[in-house]
Amino acid sequence: METYDIVIIGAGPAGITSAIYASRAGLNYCLIEKGPIGGKVINAYEIENYPGFSKIEGAMLALNFRKQIKDLNINLKKEEVTLIDKMDDTFYINTNKERYQAKYVIIATGTKENDLNLPNEEALKGRGISFCATCDGAFFKDKEVVVYGGGDSAITEATFLAQIVKHLTIISRHELRGEVNNIKKLQSYTNVSYLPNTVITEVIGKDHLEAVKVLTQGNKENVIKTDGLFVYIGSKPELKFLNYMDILNPKGYIEVDKHFETKIPNLFAIGDVIEKELRQIVTAESDGANVIHTIQNKMR
Image (cartoon, rainbow, N blue to C red; front, side, top):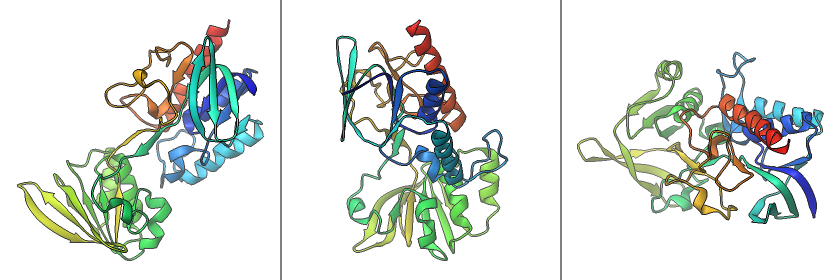
């Protein structure tokens, strides 16, 4: 069993920043990540509000993260955490490969996109239903597609799709609520139409998606034929491994104090797993830097 002062779980912007600061401080730590480095950043089409880059693709920024991890010799474990437990003052972290112990644990696992929770959805995932336009958009070149959602993620991914599809319909339960510049950019495309105050009530198809049934304002039903449906209706934290459900708030996020510490001493959470007003790369990175500062103070 390997022993560390700090175990960081999740290599998105928050977790990576924690690992960088831990490394530079000479702390005994490891960073555990089950998936690609960068987290959801890798799925972003273009990022235009990150200092140092007037514009950068999410995949390229994730590659930069990976290069920095290599250049700094960050202690990275490519494993999946399956359980966290605590005995006395020590945390025990089980993965699909090893078991670790640590004095401090930082949870930075981010979130997973919400499902539609509709019949037939599971059967059509990967057969017309997608949660990542930059991953799957090329399959729908010159076709009819639908984006479901009205926040920043939906708007930026719809902007990417508008450049390659024949026609794009944005369905949202409310008016568009993203950054003004992002909305203006999307509205500049002439092959985009909008259905606000509308919900999808059914996904239709057998071997592949053929249409979606919607309920518009005024309780009017309509069927929209489509080749693809890209879903962006919010997300929830990925915390299957967590053995402390009493640290979650009613929305499913981890509750922390101003120093990112939970009510379980020395268990911290940062990034999108905590409830916050602004979810951006830079705010996640700020969390990552501050939590290491807090832990260093506790070590003194």
